[in-house]
Image 1: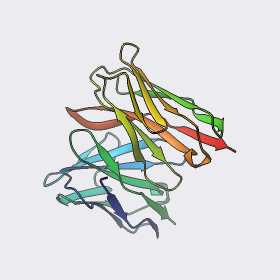
Image 2 (image 1 turned 60 degrees about the horizontal axis):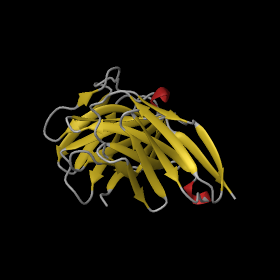
Image 3 (image 1 turned 30 degrees about the vertical axis):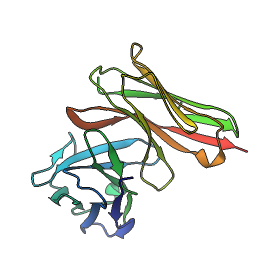
Length: 114
Length: 112
């Protein structure tokens, strides 16, 4: 099946610094990737939709200047959390769309901001 | 209208039993209904999916039942095993709308 990887799997950073998370589709090309945030024991919350070669579309309430998304190629999308604060600590998950419907998720990145 | 309601929130089933998770939706434009399985600290994995032109789809021990008129669908896990213990999310989407709407999740625990 389609494989999506994320790097890093976990990261600890200090408040005020920026962190970049990579999402790669390993065996297929993905024109569309999605970024989700998940709090403990909760469902996935869509943050933004990333289309290759164009600007990301952010969901209501998601600060686009804080969560920078770049989808520079058909296999790579990046999420940069700028000036991270403790409230940004969360589990970030990307997914890549293969076909009309199917989405395949990455293993997630645990971000802890101290 | 974009909501997908999922129940129960948690479920405890004995090994060998049947686990049943239910979902309901409002938007009749949805035409793809996947189920995802998520283990702690991992991303969701696509388990099984169904389109509304069929009433049932079975893959191994996992079966989706779909009731288009009631706008409901459910996941049945037959012969539940401790390794099935995870959180399950139902979801819905339609081809013209890229986003997937997720249910709230069901934490399944299968006890020996």
